[in-house]
Image 1 (cartoon, rainbow, N blue to C red):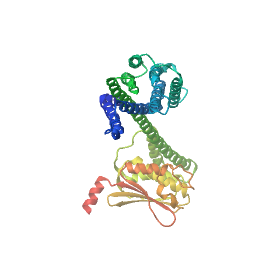
Image 2: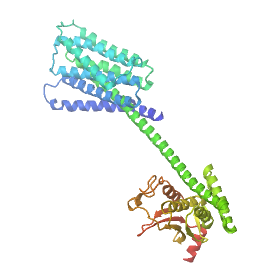
Image 3: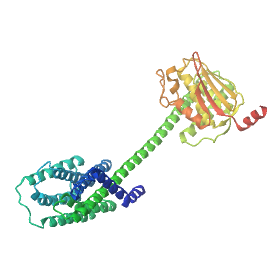
Length: 483
């Protein structure tokens, strides 16, 4: 709401002044070619100002229509209809003044009288809009209503009317002004519009009501025509500025709403990814624990050392699974003994039937134990799923500034045409039965740890994935002193 109020304040005087100035400049440009000629007079200025005002009012109707398309308010729909119809009847009168249709001189006052009822009716259409259902497009309805008004004017021109009595035109001008004031009072009491919009529409109604006298410069004194020209342009400028602010605010509000929905969708998508990642790891962990349980209870001849290793693995993996289920944050990044982290993961994968070659190295890295275990679990699980007969080689090595965990297999490898997108979410090879979740979540976890995960480009069968982790602080110091 604060943004809307700021936009409203910005239009008070300034935008209306700019719009009025633009209309005046356009009027000067249109009359420039006749500036040096003797034919230039108040009639030409009045005629062109009426044209510019009607065009501006039509533009205001289109802007109001833009505002309506966003909010679909019933009252705004009928405002669009009334404004568009008002502009069309004004443009029709301009066509008549050019001599393209019948315009008897003695019929001008009768046409002005017809204008009184037209203006009053269009104003009442807006005020009664709360009771009128919107069944058609308001822009089309405005065009149709404007054509009906112009048709009525053509019929009136075709009638054999006598000239009105002297002084009738002055009464008509006063009545037009009074009708504008009546419409303004009705709009001021119309609570369906905001106070700001009511004030602006009231001002535009009065100014355009007085400005309609500019359409009859032959019958009016020169001073009144001059006043009508000014009020006509200013009223149109107020209406255009008002419609522009409403349309701009509607577009901004719609864009903001779309942005909010996109943020919510992104948040929901991230939550879904997190749930999918958690479910993926839970399935792998449960499968490994189930295999270890079968080994302990149904396979004879297991040595005490092997039994102890399986029990330690199950205890470690159950603790990690509990943290995954509860959503509790894992340990903060710090010094991690990779042997302690990799041991349970290797034992779980071995219990599930994966042949893994791995030797403890006593290497430490900087990270979170649960995240490192999950990444390596995903890599080893992929070996078991996509290369079940292959042996996985798990190697920990130290490079300059980082510790790398390398998982290699001799299976069919990753298809070349999907290697560039192997870490994309939901992307999987044509021969894969997975969901494209594991490697994508593993890459995100590695980046969150300040490391990397990449697929090594190698010739021949098999695939090699390299997880890079920052070195532990102590290890970095030792490496630097050795260098």
